Image: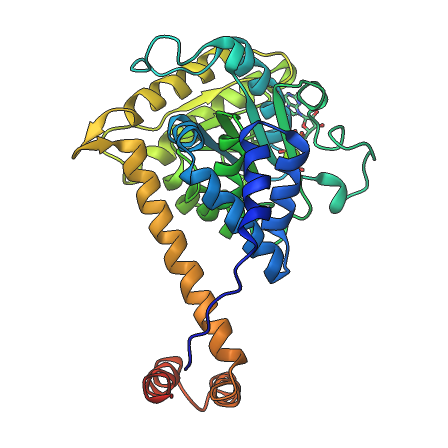
Amino acid sequence: VTMLGAPRASSSASAALAAAVLRGERAQLAKSITVIESKRRDHQVLGAGVLAHCLQDRRGRARIERSFRVGVSGPPGAGKSTLIETLGQAYLRDGVDSATMAQGEGDASRRRLSVLAVDPSSNRSGGSILGDKTRMPELARDPRAFIRPSPSRGTLGGVTRSTQDVIPLCEAAGFDFTMVETVGVGQSETAVEGMVDMFVLVVSPAAGDELQGVKKGVVELADLIVVNKADGDFVAAAQRTVSDYGRALHLTTPKNQFWTPTVVSCSAVTGDGIPALLDQFRAFRTVMDEEEAGSTRKQNRRAQQRVRYLRTMFADRVLDLLADSQHFSSEWAEKQEAVHRGDLSPVEACDQLLERVQFAP
Ligand SMILES: Nc1nc2c(ncn2[C@@H]2O[C@H](COP(=O)(O)OP(=O)(O)OP(=O)(O)O)[C@@H](O)[C@H]2O)c(=O)[nH]1
Ligand SMILES: [Mg+2]
């Protein structure tokens, strides 16, 4: 296997884009996200350059380090988008400062929100005006909010791996609070949990005591469970659902010793329970701002997430390189076929392929 250098983007192009992003120019932020999400290698390289410049910039880096990231996941139709619309407005009004934040850091005039959300029109019939489609009409016209619809629900329920690069880019542009919406489709919850500081599971009141197909593994990932739609005829059902999830939480191993996830109910429509929800955000953020082994828990969590991202990306890219390489592609295809037929076990195939890699020129 020969290692080829990756193409380098003209650093002046990425520097110019990064400068515009750091000035908070929305059109240039949108353009940078588009190149990051692009399948074209030259675009990706340009996008990586923009992010690198933002990380090297002192102000950009400080903004990224101060930010707060919340993942909002849950079954289809649970009210995630509506809840983000309501929560987002409440955030812009009241903030989600942690108790340990320095005076002035949570300056209301500087609050900015980015929302990375699934665009429902891509999978269903719906409206046609951008922003409207995401069910976030108020945020869509608020200059303090930046809404980026994701084109497809895909296998990760609306996030892609590049979302991990898009989040810090929005932050470098001054959007200090990010909410990422994903539809729960198995893989998506794990993926988004690996990108955010706080993972919120949103469900709607259940008719019976079943957990609406939400898997135990997903409940385990949650830092907070929200039973939405606790309004009108759903109030009693919402209370039962709160108890059901409370019991489910008791049966899971806590993700962290420093935080005990709870279940709260609210209504994204009436606003009931929203202040208590923001209080949970603040409490969690406060705990994440506390130090543990020399850095804050948030820093530690993000450091782990970055390394995990690197590992999966590197593994995938190496495989892509190999699969495309002259020396390896036919053997790779053969082994896959043999495993597919059942003539070769995956372990054996893997061992044989690894040997090939080690002895390749
Ligand atoms: N009664 C009530 N209805 C709600 C509430 N929140 C959302 N809804 C309704 O539930 C439906 C789905 O809301 P969305 O916000 O689109 O739900 P979602 O989880 O984002 O849906 P997907 O992105 O398609 O998975 C809409 O008809 C909303 O009006 C709520 O708090 N109370
Ligand atoms: Mg939605």
